[in-house]
Image 1 (cartoon, rainbow, N blue to C red):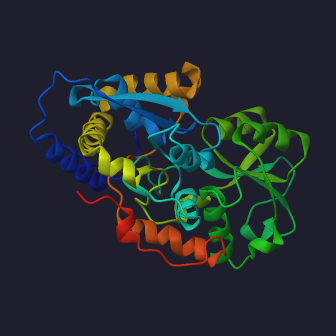
Image 2 (image 1 turned 180 degrees about the vertical axis):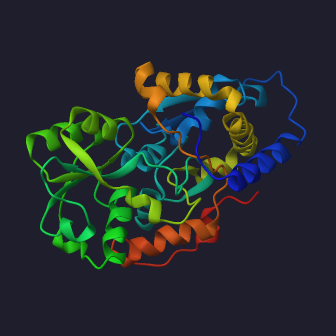
Length: 321
């Protein structure tokens, strides 16, 4: 299934990627490439990083990227802070909570973004649960991939704008791979889930989609951002430049329909998915550039839900061009 988002947004992304590609690429140097460990999780939002790594878009710019799978996205900031990763892709909500906690990390770019047409994120209810509306969620037990994680925050906002208090729901924290068993076993009434985990539940008949709740959110806001420690960024400007340019080139590659088979091959490789699953999955629209305004929108939701307590200098959190 090819990418599914507006022609306007596709044109804008292609124009931006082409402009970046028109910049003079740094000449290959005889010196050793800068080695970077990059942490990713099991979502298609990292497609451009996979592409830039395997298609040599980082390597030709003197950047050697080692991709490391991190099962729990919320642990990526701590791994970056410790130095076991130099870069990684937390969600905006996880990142902002880490900054609130004292980590000095800066945003280099972005992965996937929200889209009105992206329907591989949603509320999947147990068969027979009777959940059809936000009001039906009151009093229910609902599994989320992390308390304070992006899907939990977005789902709580969906409840709020529909007049339902998130306090009326019992949230059960559970990783994506457990969602199918929890629904089938009746441990929860529903799960906030996505991707192949959502498909597995629906195909088994154990559950159904009660709402694609993320489609009410603003188009183009980041769901995954790429970050690094500020001191590492200051010490490695060439590596950062190479990463950002490689990301832009990979975005252009992703947006070309002729490359769909190759993109899916890479998703299967890094997400450990069988070809039939990869063939059916939607690919999150790319958003290589992240703005302070976008971060502030997520920050406002976090403050409203009591997950962060102070305002932040959002402009200072995004690395300038």
